[in-house]
Image (cartoon, rainbow, N blue to C red; front, side, top):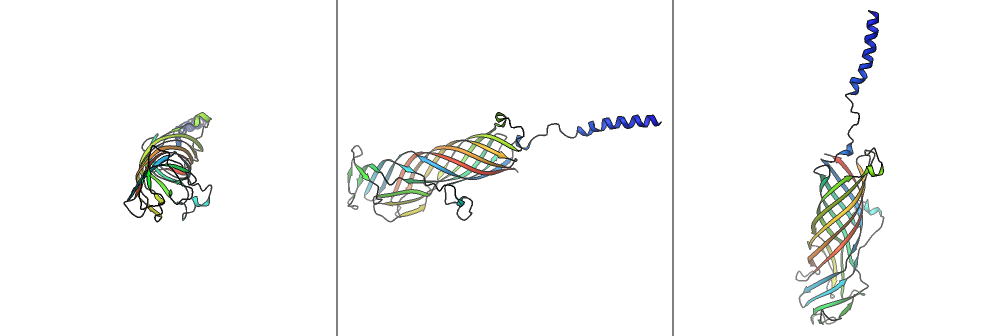
Length: 286
């Protein structure tokens, strides 16, 4: 009887670890292995480059175009304003909220707060008509001619979308885990993803302009539309926090820009842009 008890105890001690081991997966599924149902949000900053553009101005007693106008952004650099709730909309910023419809694809809405400043120190070619109501600039300027106007002192025109060139858009994006390429095994601690996407939306700029000596105008107005495409790298830490870098290029067409307090004055332009973005965010299952 004693021997039977000892043998039974030895058998139980050998079988028990096997039974309990079956309750614990050998290779537990990592949180970062699947994205479906997750939501993310990020906030960051950007720099922009713009192609030259033709800007068409029209209103009572004038109708002219400035050709190949150069412009630049208005960067603030690394600044505490990016983290100050009272001032965080002043610099060039990006805000985006998205949801994964499956492991690879997500839909998001975002606000790209860019800044567009017409380069003041330039001489632009001009074509069109400026009437006698503006004697300093009155004349007929043939588009095919070599008529130019000096914009340097700003008396003829100052033109900016600095509060800002606001691109409100929706994006459809794909995300792929490329951690294996860098021999990263535990993606719940650190993961590298590549993302690509396309988007579109409308432009809601606050255009700051002074035209032909008229009173300065600075107001928000829906002015046109934009389309864009992007590619980026996402670096996720401890499952929930990430840094994302993006290159985003696109086309902007603004056919109804407010330029003065008189609603009969307007401008239109279209151009390409290239945006460089770095953002910080979080991703969570909902």
